[in-house]
Length: 285
Ligand SMILES: Nc1ncnc2c1ncn2[C@@H]1O[C@H](COP(=O)(O)OP(=O)(O)OP(=O)(O)O)[C@@H](O)[C@H]1O
Ligand SMILES: [Mg+2]
Image (spheres, rainbow, N blue to C red):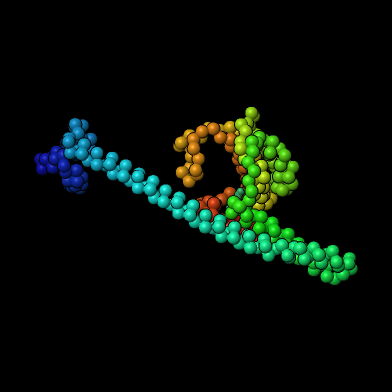
C-alpha cells in the first residue's frame, strides 16, 4: 500500500503524519489504520544504532562550542567586574574629595556658631539663630562621616574580636533603634571563632542594616541577628565577591519587612541608590 511504503521510510516522519491525516479523512478499513499506527510508532521510536564517526564529530564540536561559550561568558563577567570596580573607585575618590572640602568649610561654621552661643546672653534673639546654625552643622558633620565611611577613608583598627560579644554590647542600642513595634531575636552560635575586624566598622554596618530593617517594618515585624561558624566552598562564593574558600564566621541580619523587588536588588550595592525620601536616605547605608 502506498501509505505503508511512505511510513516505512525512516527519513520521512513528515510524510507519515500526512498519511495518517489522509487515511482518517477517508476512513478506510480498520486494518489499514492499525497498519498506519504501527508504522508511525516504529518511526517515533527508531531502533538504536551505534554512533557513526560523523555523530562523534558533531558531539565533539558541540562540546568545544560549549566550552568556548563558558569561557566567553566568564570573560564578560570579569570585564564587567573590572569596570564596576573602576567606577566605584572613581565615585569613592570624588566622594572623599567632596567630604574633605565640606569638612574644611564646616570647621569655621561650627566654630563661629559656638562662639556666638558663648557670647549671646540667654535672652539674646541671636542665640536662637546660633543654635540653629550649630544644629545644622552637626547634621552636616554626620553626613560627612557617612561619606568618609563610604569612601573608605576612615581609619581602620582591626583586632581579634568575638562577634557575639560585640553584638551583646550593641543590642540595647539596636533595640532602641528599631523601636518597640519590632521584636528582636538573637541566634548567636556557640564557640564562635574569632575574627579580625575593626569593631567600629562592625557597629556601623550593624547600625545601617538595622536602620534599613526598621524602615522596612514601620508597623511591626521581627529582626533577627545571627552568627555561626561556616565553611565556604568554591561553589558557595558569588563571583562578584573577592573571597577564598575556607572557614568563615557568618553575621546575618534578617527582617520580616517589605523586602526588595528585583529592580531594587539590582541596584543594592550602588552608592547613592535609595528608594527613600531625600530627607530620609542618601543610599549610603
Ligand atoms: N532590609 C531592607 N528591606 C527592604 N528594602 C531594603 C532593605 N535594605 C535596603 N533596602 C532598599 O535598598 C535601598 C538602598 O539601601 P541603602 O541602605 O543603601 O540606602 P538608604 O537606606 O535608602 O539610605 P541611607 O542608608 O543612606 O539612609 C533602600 O532605599 C531600600 O529601598
Ligand atoms: Mg540604609
